[in-house]
Length: 481
Image (cartoon, rainbow, N blue to C red; front, side, top):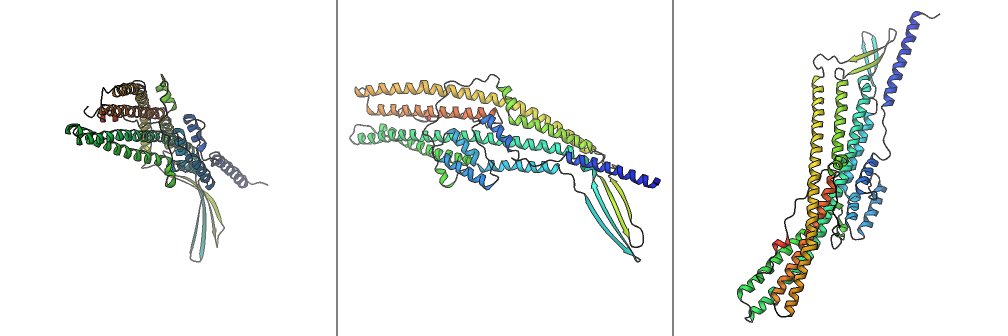
């Protein structure tokens, strides 16, 4: 015969099992696990979309990964580094980028941690006195943390997605910076070669002036002018050589090379100017759709919105514990039971936490709007600089350099006809070399502007200031002749 007490106990047991099953479902439903690639696949996909599918990324998580990277780096360094090869080398070998990838692992670990249910607690107590011994045992569980786990998991998922976006942004930034460093380094080497030609012409002119002055065929003022130009040419060459060393070192830092690797070779000249500039009539829309900083700002809004929901969900109850108790006595029957602990919101009603969360959300919205506005402005500025640089480089290539060449041909004919002297011919040669160097500077500025434009379409660029006219303004055209 079943008594009422046994029926009540059986009902309690069934109810307790239902609660346990429900809590287990919540816990298992929120569980997260480590992904095979640590979230690196999303970074590779973003890099492939913006840099091209042939670009290779590698995260050195194991010793064999590092060995594979080193073999690929050695293969790239075995031949002169073009622009694309330099970018590929930097994306594989830059240790700062490898450190940035580690943030993915940290964010994923936080995500997995958020998906784990809280551990139960156990307490043990022993009391004795008057010949009596009492032993109590408690098992307790943070029920509030378990109930809030799905919301916390969503927050960490947003943070993980944000970490992937940040990592992809660092990849694209390094690629753009490497392109610019490569352009500066190659242009500096070209400039040194032309500066040496100027130096040779100035040295020849100064020596000829000295000899002619010795025999009385040159006055002192003319000789001093040639010597002054020679001194200026020597200063210009020294500065160009220093710029060559500095730009090469900046490129080496981007490439992550050291030791014997710093002997990498570069092409002798910059790539030719494209036949036509890009036409981007909807550049602002492209930037809003493609830029990763805009996407990151949207993720921050979503993240703070979820955080606001979590804060409101646990506004009144941040501590809710359920536990079981089991006590034994040396002179009395054992006792079992359960208990629930809850924090009473007498002083803190959660108003401050909710107000803070709402303010953080509004802050994220305003920052996202600012990011979008700045993105539109930055792509407009970058495209304007790109078009101007293309026009200037084309003018240098198609107008100034051919004009200087024709002048040189005419002066050579006049010299052969004994209509002008050797100093006029040397002065014209110096002017022609200066024009070529100006064309190099214009071509360099174009490739820098294109790198800035490419970066402006995917993230915040470090826009290059327009370079001042370099050699053409610095070199005297004829040293006073």
